[in-house]
Image 1 (tube, one colour):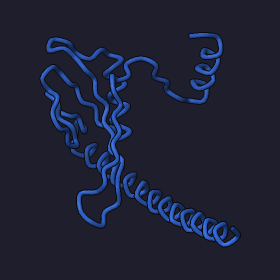
Image 2 (image 1 turned 135 degrees about the vertical axis):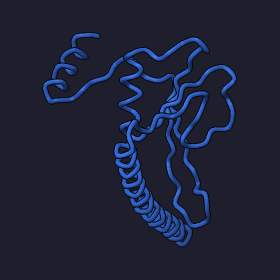
Image 3 (image 1 turned 120 degrees about the vertical axis):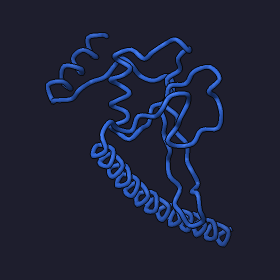
Length: 149
């Protein structure tokens, strides 16, 4: 790390942040899901994928990163050769997706994910209304330009 990065890292740690630099998965995959049924709002799906050979295991830094991502609601999958196929969530690519070790933690994690999902749906609905208003303004401006010509 250079001097600037070191000073930022020190400041973040002084503020109580745990900073991860090592152990990032090979891929962070995002997909907009248009909704399973008519009338449902689109959602953003995310999964982190760590690619390993059949005999490789995640390092300690990778385990820490995977745990942090999963706490944030992003499932982490270990992909090995031959695992590539259509993915569904939670992702299962040769190893189980770790949700949580205990039932109370799993229930808490699922509740948190559902609450975050509701908040994201509300934000998306608000953004869709804003986009509709902007489209309305845009077409109104076009009509005024056409009239002026």
